[in-house]
Length: 277
Image (cartoon, rainbow, N blue to C red; front, side, top):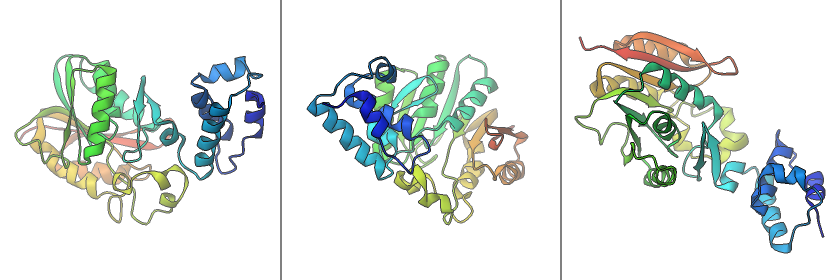
C-alpha cells in the first residue's frame, strides 16, 4: 500500500513553481480531506480508488493544466468558487479591485455592475460584503453566466443577479453608482499566452487586440451612458498599462483619475468618476 507521505515525496511536477502545494491540493481532493489532514496523518494509506483519483489528477497537472480546473474550484476573497475551462481562474491580484470598490462607496443601497463576470468572483465578493448593494454581473458567454449563477445560488447571495450580455448590450436604460471590470487586456502577440496556466484559459477572456486595450477603450467610451452622476468606473489592467488607461479616462471626461498598486508594487487598477456636464 502507498502512504500519503510516500506520494508527496515522489510527486514530480518539474514545470510548476508550486509543485509541493499542487501535489498536496490534488491529494487532499482525492481523499476528500483538508491539506492539514495530510500533515496530521502522513502514514495514512490510500485505497485503490483514492490512489487512482490522485494519479489521474497528477497526470493532468503534469501536462500543465491548472490546479483550479482539475479541482473545479478556486478560493477568491472569502469565497470558494466553482471554476471551469470557459472562465478565467480568479487571481489574488484581482482582490485589489474588490478592496477598492468597497472603499469607494458607503454600505448603503447602490446599484453596482460587474462587466465580464466570468465565475462571478468580483460581483459575488462585493455582494457578500455589502448586503445593501444590488450587484449585476454580466458575461457574453452563456456557460460562464450559468456557472456564476451556480456560485451565487450555493453562496445564497440574493442581492446579485447574473445576466448574459456583451458588455453593455443588454443593459439599456440602466444606471449604476459603480461599474467594475477585469476585462481582457493582453496583447495578441504577448509571449505569456504560451506559458503557464494561461495556455488553458479561454483566449477570449485574455486577449484584446494588438495592444491589449481594445475592450478597455470600449468600456471607458460607453460607461458614462450607464453611470449615475458622480458614479465610478474601476478597471483592472496589465502591469504596464496604467498610464494609457489613465489617459483614456481623462480624455473621456472622467475626474479624480488615479491608479493603485497591487501587492507586487504594480499599478494594477485605474479608476475615475464621471459627473454629468
